[in-house]
Image (cartoon, rainbow, N blue to C red; front, side, top):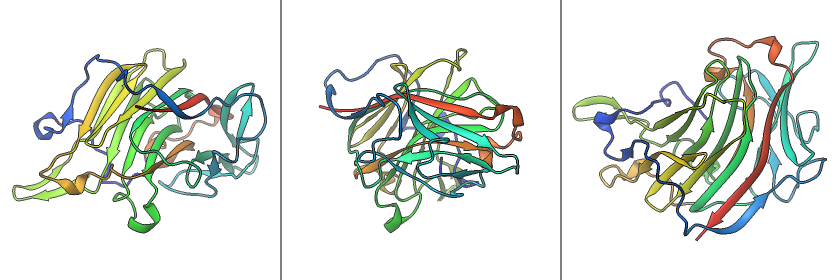
Length: 269
């Protein structure tokens, strides 16, 4: 989600000994102890002991202003976390971005999120994680794990990504791109789906609706690419426009754009 021009690269099999293509093998049954969750029961504002907010124009030249604790943009509604983007009469776009920074840290185990993305050109919903040391080491050295990204102009394509210090690297053979993305096509893209990450000390595995879609493994030849042996925090946001979501423009008919989260669950062995 935190993108720069050189940071978005997809699968490249010839350079990918540490990356594995999709296979249908399901979750690890040993990871079954629920240690943190939010079911978003009831209606009202979010649980402040679990969630904080981003505020302002944050990244990627996106069109929206993220608001803080504004129920128009972020609320619990009948047991659902609703993140809603609005466009005002003066043209200002507002939306929501929530995270667990300073509230709860994740380290290994499985993160699952059941969500329904909005539709329409210009939307860019995401479920992702970054290292809690981001202010100390910066991005991408903090590490970034995108459990879900989707853009409204290509609505059936859902993808997971990994961003590391080695997104672009100079080798003795010249410049090459490090692959780090996996896609899943959902014909029923407007339905509810479950997005999951299984996180191990040397492997990241991604699952959509319980189906394994790909993995990223630690490569001992390039230890500087692995930033995933430290605590990370979770972010859920709805961006509008920006460097990826806005590549085909923003359709004014999308507003209000509604991104829904049924639950977030975190399991460990």
